[in-house]
Amino acid sequence: MSRYLQKWNELADVKDEFAERDWFPGTSGNLSIKVSTNPLTFFVTASGKDKRKRTSEDFLLVDKKGAPAEETKLKPSAETQLHVEVYNRTNAGAVFHVHTIDNNVISEIYKEDGKITFKGQEIIKALGYWEEDAEVSIPIIKNDAHIPTLSQQFSKYIHGDKGAVLILNHGITVWGETAFEAKKYLEAWEFLFSYHLKLLALQNVQKQYPVMPIA
Image 1 (cartoon, one colour):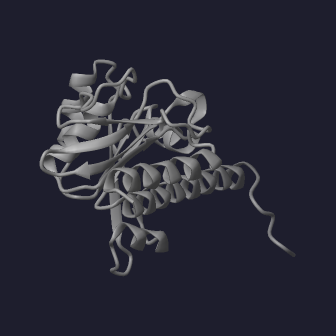
Image 2: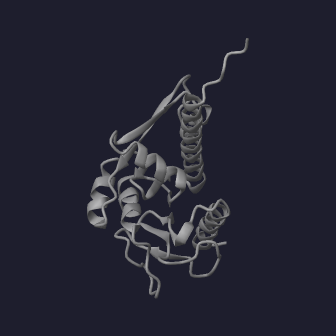
């Protein structure tokens, strides 16, 4: 199997898995995987496609500027420039962006802080932090409709071959050394968001309806 086809299938498998989790509402989200380093090329999801379906037009090959590297009628996702920033600044092998209710709500709650921090959760080990009571933070940036401006803000938080950024009321963008690693990081962040929101909800209920002491 050619590297070209191997990477296509690898990205298609990730897309299928995320679709099963309902992470692509309204054709939202975008995924990419690096195909070659020199010259830089990567597959990225085509714009406006129903990501619940698997077709031969799900992805297109683009270059280091995010422009089609081959003749095609397909258009790359509107946010391909964010993927370009990651690939041109790191050795990452995959970039995933999904909109979930949890990550949107988290970004809204903590937008004034510009980040959210988690500490002491076992799942943090999936992000590469193994020390006891490890602490991790994810930045939250403004969702600028002007993609070049959004890309500029986003690029300030690209510091290595793995990372993640929350875009206010938009979604999370995660990258990793491989598609497997990027998927693992995304799953870990989504777990943390879901856990935190459920904990906040329970704490709010307890404040409203405190448990009566047993006589």
